[in-house]
Length: 331
Image 1: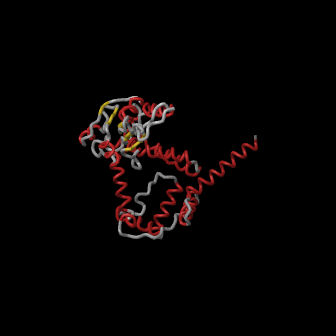
Image 2 (image 1 turned 90 degrees about the vertical axis):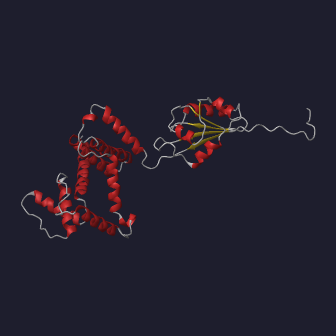
Image 3 (image 1 turned 90 degrees about the horizontal axis):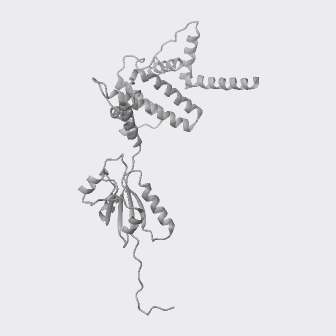
């Protein structure tokens, strides 16, 4: 075996380079990339994208980043990094599985020196970003679905009630999977009605108007969070809430805003709560029917901090379980 002569320089293997897969959320406006993303793009030896219509392209070019239209294989991309070069591949929000799978197979083969591989998110979804998807999907369904396109506020009203009851049932059952699904069904009702409202020829509004109004209301009714007032206890918060509602609504009667279509026990409890909160002395009507007895029970329960509707549902569920058990024993 021949030894190298003293002082002979040892050849240094060429650096394998670096591959950067740059992603960006389609829910964030194009061009709004993170500072690390812009640094990487400007410092790269080559920037590629397989999509000639990628929404980021006009903004990258405006920023002086030269982007080439190419869809290299894993082998071609590794070869492009030879000599320590950095190649950035601008991919879609879901990535490029063809390319990443190819790179994984190539790296696992052990037959080539792999470049450093980095997945760099250029932008991130903010909390609530999937709501944008929901609005887009609802808009398309409203335009293209024969059934959905014909629905009206009045025709959908019963579904809002049904979904609300199913949500309550999921909460009472403690089923987290059902809870998530039922919350989605309730949210669907909100988005559906808001989409229909856009088409009103005289007083249109959309989901942004709905959300904007709710944001303003929440901020206004929480001055201890967004303003200068303080609230140390839940009772303080409740008092703030009642004061701001009274100013907003300017009601002439404590019964205004109480929906008469709600279940009877809930209606009775709500009226009792309004009377108690206003400090009014209104005797309960009396009579010989069960309705007056239930009214008195509901008002008394509310005054003692018990939701009579929830209490009756819990009792009814226990009764249901007893019936099922009795049926099993009878069999």
